[in-house]
Structure formats: C-alpha cells, structure tokens
Length: 138
Image (cartoon, rainbow, N blue to C red; front, side):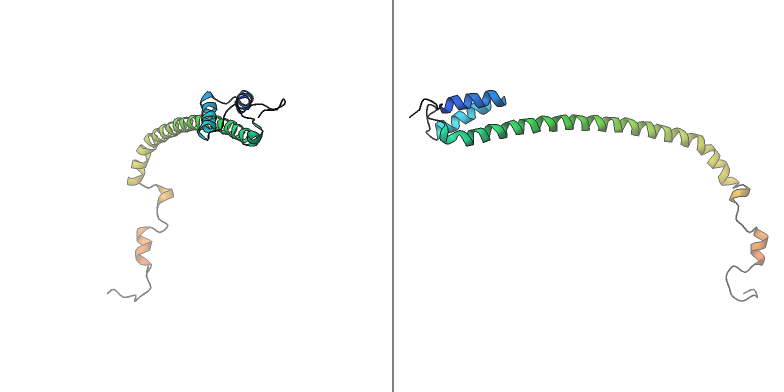
C-alpha cells in the first residue's frame, strides 16, 4: 500500500534513470527484473531504494569507466602509430648512415691504417717469444 509521501518502484526507476542518464536498455532490464520476481512496479519503492540507487550508481560508474578506457585506448593507438612513424624515421636514418659508412669500411678492411695496426710489427713479434717455452727451435 502506498502512503502519501511514497513513490512507486516505476517512479523511482524513472527518476534514477534521469539522474544518472542510464540507457533505456538498462532501465528495461531493471523493470524486467522486478516483473520476473513478481514485484509490481506500482508497489512502494521504500524496501528497494538502496538496491535501486546502488544499481543505477554502479551502471553510471561502469559507463564512465568504459568511456575513460575507450579514450585511453584511442590515445594508446595514436601513440603506437607515432612510435611506428618514429621507428621508420630512425630506420631510414640508420640505412642512410650505413650507405655512407660502408665504402669507408671496405677500404679499412684492406688497409687498417696506422691507428688500427697491432702494437708489434711482424719482425718484432718473430723475435719475441709469445708463449713461454724452450728457446731453441723445435
């Protein structure tokens, strides 16, 4: 039985839907839940206020978090696209650098130059024993 100050389950669902901006699909699911449990939408809502408010508050939070996650995913995809572009730029620079360095490397392999020669010349290394052992030829 409804008192003068109370409202129906249907009214409370409508008010909460307006306050939270709940989609019509969710509102229909809540109404259906009451009907499935054989609770009339014309009954007094006071025994169900806490549960209804919690359900609509959670639905709004899930919707908000989903939007935030969607925005974050879009930013992440944009960052990966930027990263891919930077990677291609770096790869291109590296390939250009290799092309300019490659001819110099080929020259160096045939003549290492004074900075890249071993410390001892061939003549010195032949006269110095490299491994301790007998001095006579074996």
